[in-house]
Amino acid sequence: MVSIALILREVYHEFKGRLPETLAFTCTDFRDWLESDGRFNRRIVVADWSCVRGVEGEKLRELLRKRLLESLSQDLGFVLLLTEPDKVLSVEGEVKVLFHPHTPKIVRVDSYTANEQALKAVADTLSELFKIPRSEGFPMPLLNTLPKLFADADREYKDFVQQNLQSKSIAFVKRDVGEGGV
Image 1 (tube, helix red, strand yellow):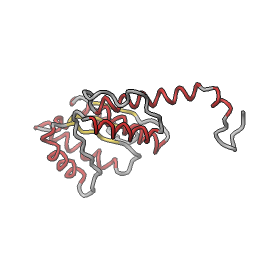
Image 2 (tube, helix red, strand yellow):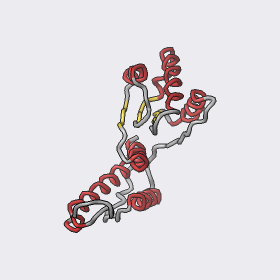
Image 3 (tube, helix red, strand yellow):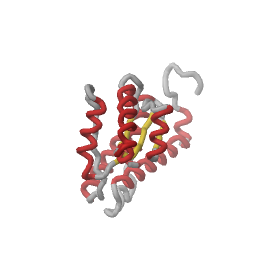
């Protein structure tokens, strides 16, 4: 979940120029939030799909449907629904029903331990995406999972930005011809 949230945070930041608010809910908190605020715009909302099962779940599903349909006319936002691997397809179908007659953009993500080839491919992609050089030891040993790889890449990116911001050579660079100052 952490790796996906990091990717969504960066996607949001690229499109909107600011960071989204991230909200992760327990079942009770999710219901209370949907009843009071429930806006998905400008947010990354993380909830466990098991919350919308059972008798209480029926009311929650209807409220979730209302909020999801409202989100179609709002600003950019993301919803991460967590579920067991064997229930992913059924949850995807249920979410499509909630959005009916609209078609939601759904991306299924499986969590797994990465092999060396997958780690290298992801590390190369992240290095290219963030335009940062890969340091020695990146990617990490095989026992790491993709969420750890993304967290480490995020840390590497932040360190790279911090080093460049502290560089004396950057102090004399104008960002735009129209800017005043140095």
